Image 1 (cartoon, rainbow, N blue to C red):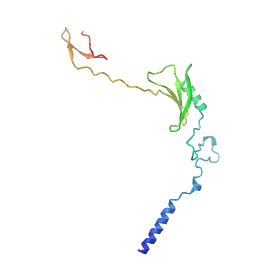
Image 2: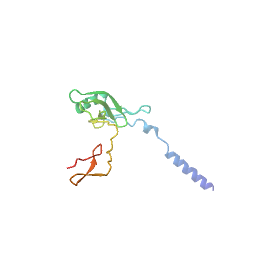
Image 3: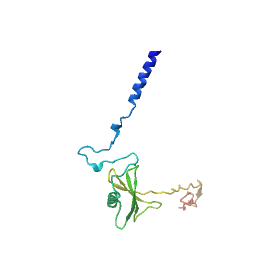
Image 4: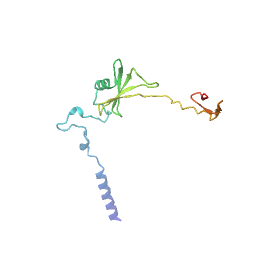
Length: 154
């Protein structure tokens, strides 16, 4: 029994020694390496969330070149940290009903596209009664259209 306790203690000690964290190896994983461009390194201190490497002004230039035509404009930008994208509300000359377009600039690809952000209910088609009307020439017509009216007889 005494040997079992000794082996258990030794096993526990070995297990716990493997679970310690070497704080020296966790200092700053985002430090620039020699000959690396420091502008491309994102620092992430423990108290800060991830930050954009692209400024709002840089993103707006890409957005204006891609999404905007003559007479259209963009509002101030919003940075989404989760998707690493800049969002600019776009005042476009051509719009879609129920949509609020935004020009979205990807920080990773440095490209932009319009996100229409459409909302609203898509009206289902009306189910018309399945009856038929006898026409004077002996043929039949069925109901259809938005008001479920009988088609004209030939």
